[in-house]
Each structure stands twice: as structure tokens, then as C-alpha cells.
Image (cartoon, rainbow, N blue to C red; front, side, top):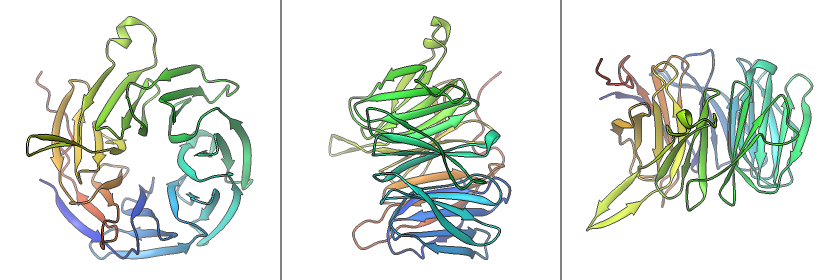
Length: 319
């Protein structure tokens, strides 16, 4: 099993998001409910490189590139972080909380989704929103890959956009879940994974042909049997290993599970915490995994950094 390289616990509330740098192996962006945003070097001699106090609890934070990051807050503000100068600037707002972010690296653009039933595109160079789209539902989660943007929405619907033509979604996909979507994560440009508060995760491909649609499936996860009862936990976060492309899911049961979706098999499980895991992130070469936890009772959130062996998340398929 992987070892915990370090534990970061200098927080006054729960952690909402963690996101590794796309270029610095051990630099981690951490957003929390105490209004704080930190850039931390996660080596054994951990150092806080930069720290910011924003206007409201942070719901989502994300790197755009090596020198620029964004944070979205409960009050709707969108904050641009200039890592080179160590400064931050509010470049715009949503009418309600910024629930999620996604990056489109090819055009140096960030997408924010909000409970105000809109999503906006932000240009880091112009430091402003360059487009805004209204929809009929609150946005809960977002993910982008290739030319695809997926939005997980209320009322059990997922919207799929081609970013080259944002006039209308090119697919409206009813959720496979009975209850609220918690996160979405693109499978390249081929499809997406979604998770729910009901302890389920769904794999869906966009190609409408029967050969592709037969690959769609939903599975139960992050559940425990206690005294003959099936205790169901939300699946809070999804991400793919950058090298092996296996799926990691994080749940309210305090665990992180790893899956080979090609053969529909769970590979292994980590149990870093007894409290809910809120966010996870691999660094760019898959050698580190950050696991963030919520606050519970009198305990504040923590971030666990795992050092992973090369084959840790590798599929175990036979030839």
C-alpha cells in the first residue's frame, strides 16, 4: 500500500478542493471553507508558498497553467491568482455561488458553473468574462476535455456542449441516478463519468451508435454494511490517473477507490480518513495523490499526500 508522505492540517474548516500544478510536481492548490486559498509545496519538508484570504468560503479552485489559478467562492466571486507575483484579483461574479470550474487549456480559458443557472468563460489575459450562457437548471459540476464540456445539473440532467458551438448543447442526457449528481469527469473526448449522493457512479459514452452505447454502465460504490443495513455515502469526487487512466472515486465513507472501467473492476481502496473525502487530485505524473477531507464535529479538514508506486493504479488485466 502507498505511504502517506505528509499530512497538512493547518486549516480552520473543511477543505473544498485540491488541485496539483500542471508543471511543478509537488505544488498543490488548496481551497477551504475558512475563506483561505493556499499554494503548498508538499514535499516532506512542507512549505506554504503563498496564502490568500478571500471574501467568502471557497467552493472550487483550479490551476489554469503554470502561473495562473482561479478560485470560485460562495458569494459568487471569481478570483484570478497570479502565482508569479503572489497577488489575487476578483475579475467578476456570478449571482450565486460558484459551484465548479473546468479548464480549456488550448485557449487558456476557465469555465465556471454556478447555482445561478449560468456558466461563464474567463480569459486570464484579459482578466474578464468573455462569454456567458444561461440555462434552465443549477450547475453542480463541470468537466472539459478535447472540445467537450460536460455540465452536471439539478433535476437529473447532464448537458454536453461542443465548445466550438455553444449556442445549444449537442446532447441532453438524463441522469441515470434517482438523486442529485455530485461530480462529473470527462473520459477524454469520448464520454464522461458522473457520480451521485446515492453511492453510485455511471460511465457514459457520447457516440450514439449501439456499439458504443452498450459500453455504458452504472455501479454501486462507497457503501458499508452495518448491522445488516446498507449505509450509502455520496461519491464526492472523480478523477483519472494521468498515466494509467484508471478512475479514482472519493466518498463520504472516508475512502478513495480505484477502478479499471474497461473491465468494470475495482482495483484497490485507500482509507485515509474517518471523515468524508471532499476532493482528490493526482500530480501530473501520477506519483502523488492529494486527498482532502471535510470538517466533522470539532475536527477541521486535512489534506493527505500519498506517494504512489509506478504500478499502484495500473490495470491488472491478463493478456
